Image (cartoon, rainbow, N blue to C red; front, side, top):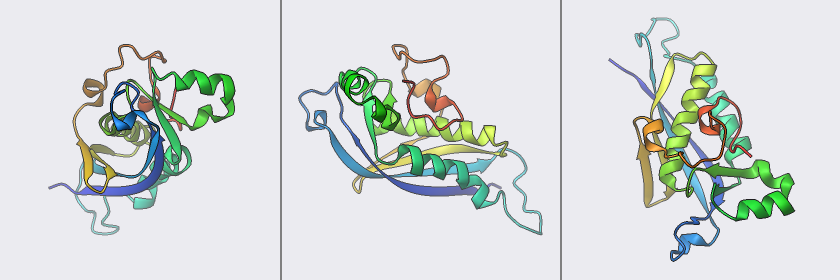
Length: 178
């Protein structure tokens, strides 16, 4: 027996795929994306006959929705290798907190794995007896990436020039390690 709780959130973003110079995604552009997280209990999932909830929705959504709404929404997603980072550092340092930086190009695949890791960090830090088992990121109405598994196995950050614990593994509101 297992209950799976799912929450969907919409956000707007822009990005470019710097390492695909011949594609149209090389030019900065934007999407209105949806992220759906799937949570399951890490302990006994039996209903108690009183409140009959695995966890209160409000508690589960508070940190996650706050992060998406206040830190992910309207960000520009860039590769840690993108020369636009130098531009922002030199000319618009006030906008650095609005840049989501990924190891390599900010594809929907790496974003789904980073989100998976981030929500599990939040759940653990908030001492909630649930874990994320799947993340769906809908980039467009016809393109969705589904991630489940171990994000540490999926995300290649050998060349990532950040701290030992990157932003996607920390239970803070960060979206980069600048």
